[in-house]
Length: 150
Image 1 (cartoon, one colour):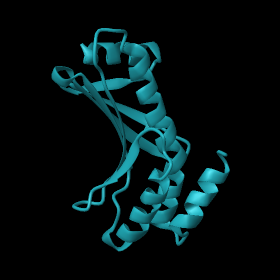
Image 2 (cartoon, rainbow, N blue to C red; image 1 turned 180 degrees about the horizontal axis):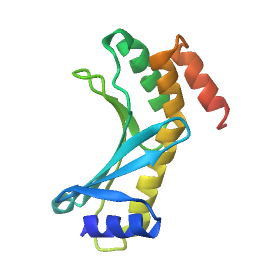
Image 3 (spheres, helix red, strand yellow; image 1 turned 90 degrees about the vertical axis):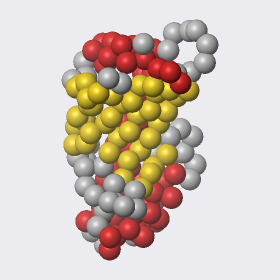
């Protein structure tokens, strides 16, 4: 059910998407700083929706501490969602999720969960890429991003 509702929302908003598994969808997003993949996982038996935007670049081990600092600074104060970092391969992703209960119209919450995920990830991706590929400090990168959205 969640998968069908999510597909309807994506069609309505004219997103091109691909079904990956029985309960997963993929969107290729063109953001302000880069292109990335957003995955949507629908878990009907638990009435859960998980949305992950995944950074297009893995973090080299030499940059682990800088990226972790950036993500910690970015997470502080976020009202919805959180950044995650995989120590095994350097993957960075942003997760939003919704747990549903009861019988009501899920569509508005699904649409909001997806929209917020993409907007927040797009907002911070430029800073992530700067920390990965330049000598900017995580503190400076966050200050630049957050000063434009106050």
